[in-house]
Amino acid sequence: MHHAGQAGGRMSVHDAPLASSRTAKITTVPIGRPDHPTRTPHKSFT
Image (cartoon, rainbow, N blue to C red; front, side, top):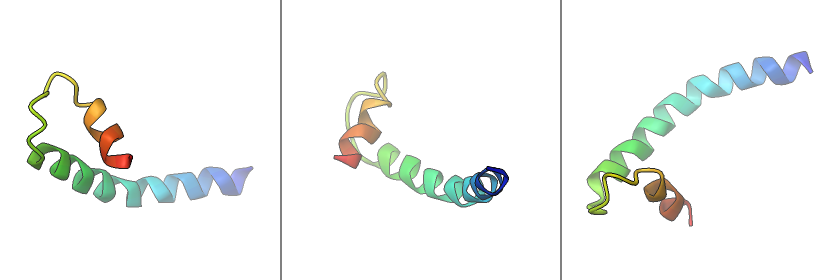
């Protein structure tokens, strides 16, 4: 259990840059729906 917690903390550090990259792509993609930024990432994942 403790190991999982530590791993999560370390992963979060790596997730930070990844999230930035994803956010950048989402912002670059002209979705035309800035009000629904949550739908943008979902479409990207699909």
